[in-house]
Length: 246
Image 1 (cartoon, rainbow, N blue to C red):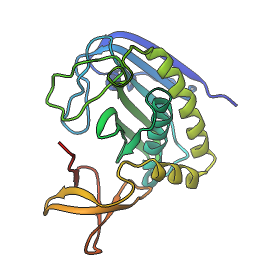
Image 2 (cartoon, rainbow, N blue to C red):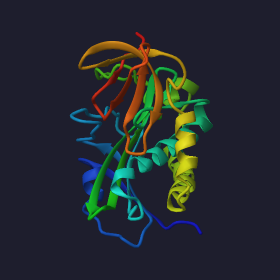
Image 3 (tube, rainbow, N blue to C red):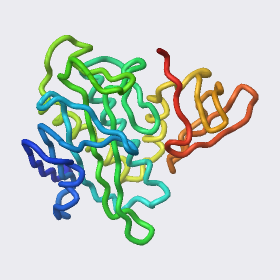
């Protein structure tokens, strides 16, 4: 059975995440709000998301994953990242998921997601995925270290509507797996898609720089690394940084 999708297209708003949280459409599986321009688009933490007006795909998606326990809510982040990966690979070839849910083409960031949730008891009530995809922007002027767009890679403009339609198809597939309890499939696909999934790489935590390899990402979102001395280290969001090549 296909899911009910409602789309709202805005010319301008401060934040599609803020806008979508003020709408009540519980009978819709996916509520999508897009904007040509966001005056206060956000990334993780205090970061902002750079985007030229009308050049990129900026949208928020509201879902009601009431079937998912709070301690396993990161599986929803995995489904969104996998849907983005499948979508973008249609245009630029292989991409990877940089924990927790950025999409990387080689060592450059092409997409990012901010997730906000509301809970009721021990279950999720709703979740908002705020997604930015660099599509047709050619020059990035912020201090973001490594942005890249589809246009940068393929050399021509791409339809943002086409990308969104494909993403929703892919998300419906993975979200359906999540609803059916096929968590093992999602975990396996996510780990196979991870950026730096093989070998030792440079990271930094509060103790300093170290080399480690990825062991796993747990359903609760913790990243488990093993350093060259065999020590296992687990990290929540913002507790460890990837040290990227310059």
